[in-house]
Length: 470
Image (cartoon, rainbow, N blue to C red; front, top):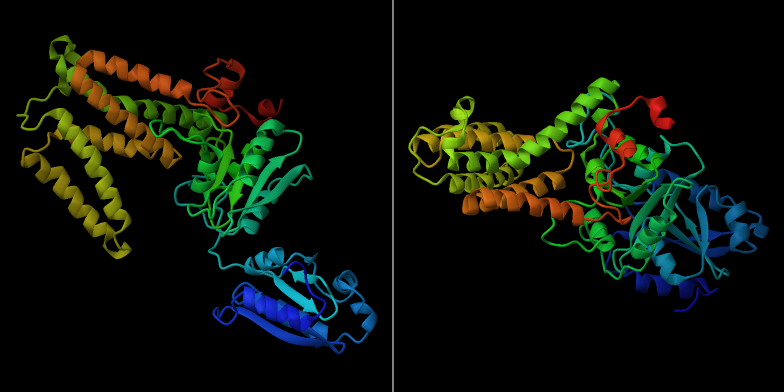
């Protein structure tokens, strides 16, 4: 079918067949009579607002002036009592619109369809995200509905310079994506690069939502786990990044928004830094940076120091193990690294009613019996527990796991080659960070490399609002 027919019965038969109405109970069509003209309305049950559609259909039956049915444009302006109305003549675009939740009205004599966007999607409440929590500030968060997510951003940035560009990706899924940016502040070359990559993407579906989008934008190297995107479920964080000239990519069916470009300093920042006075915000930020370094270096450094007890000063002698070591320390730490993730997966899949009791049992078994059995030494458990908890000081899971992988790599290098392995491991991790590039082509460690004190100062110290604006 190349075009919409002016014969209503031809259109009904064609779209009933293409939408498989006889096989899909939720794709509904009904015929109407408006001013002695036969019409057909196609929509998906569950997407159409029942109350709105009922009033629209009632208004159609009340039309008495045949001049309002002169053509599709006249009809849409004079007879459709709704704000979001469009005219389409491409059958493929009409089918996509129907399956996206819009209602398509075909009128006998019209070679176009009238699209009424009276859709609504099932959604949860805009509650505070579980991961991106704050001590003080907004308690709303993104949900799985694209339009509501963009509205939460619009609520915070009320300027016509805020642009929300729509793109559909996936030959089968036709997933809606919104590219948000502020005109005049955004890097136009980066914006063009992001837009072109998404428009030219040859995929059938975005099966993993925002992760699929990230893999379309950047071809990742498997050996470099450091994230190149900042993921957030907070509208206030997204608005702040947009005001700084970044790009936010909102994907339908996902509560996470991708921010580009993102360096490691962007990924480490969180909303708590800005909901407190500059002194407190700076303290929180510096604490997070110090903990990140300790997360990476604590256990490898401990392994290294235990290999050379003779060089330890007296005030550090407490880190030495006085108990009998039945399992090599390196193997203990590696087993614990894997065991911790096993416990995370078990907790994730445990019913809520059993989570507390099983967590207590797990803590008793690991913390007490594991030491008594001789498998683990108490200090190995202590340091592993610290780095595990410290991982959650980072706003993003991706950065936490990147640090975990680098810590395991450094542990193996240190255990195998002593001080040389420790040194070479640190150098390789540094090279991996420096070689990593953001979507804009900048170094992952910018503004540290290349060094830019003015920008670096803003990432380290929380300045007052008037200073940032200047």
